[in-house]
Length: 307
Ligand SMILES: [Zn+2]
Image: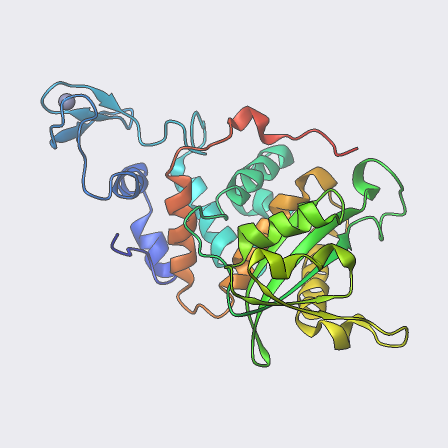
């Protein structure tokens, strides 16, 4: 697919000033080979006043927003595009209060829902697994700052983390909320996210002892009582402290644990593109995802609390 995105905010504003311009962009992302009628295969269309694409041959109606995160929205697409531009191009994204103010929404809830939908677009099914030298560990998120215990905002979540080491530098990152730190769960996380044959470094936790048998080369660093995490797994130590700092800044440390995976997904998306200078490309990748049908029904957007 040809990469087509605005390079900066001036270009963005010039290009996406109308509903038609936004619809055309979505059309191009949804049908990269050009429009083709799903009923008769004809490639000619005209756009109705309601933003539907009608086949010139059989008049079958096609909606580029059906089944996507824009499905049934009452707000203009220009607003959505602007929200996605801010979300994808700002260093630390945008929180619901800021988005509400930027778009002039009366409702905080609307801005909050939009951000939840955008976060679902930050994981790409075609992403390649981590490889080479990779550090893996588990850590806790949440709970520490709220003072609450047990359910809700104070709930502490376990998160599995994997980060590539490229000499002294860090490569790509993956983060996954896990139930417990069992061998089954950690092995499954590793197999989903790391290419077989990679060199994995962990601490001495027994759950990692079977990695050799799974086709990985495994080095376990048994931590002495005096050594801190920083010297054992420096990459992991760095990304967790960065991620916690960002979450502290964005959510003042308070977030509902059932949404943690989405916040982590957003963080990983940003982290893995931290050196990408073409900010518009991040917007394009998010848009590509947004233009696809959503695998989970949007009514499931609000999740049940983790108990
Ligand atoms: Zn047709």
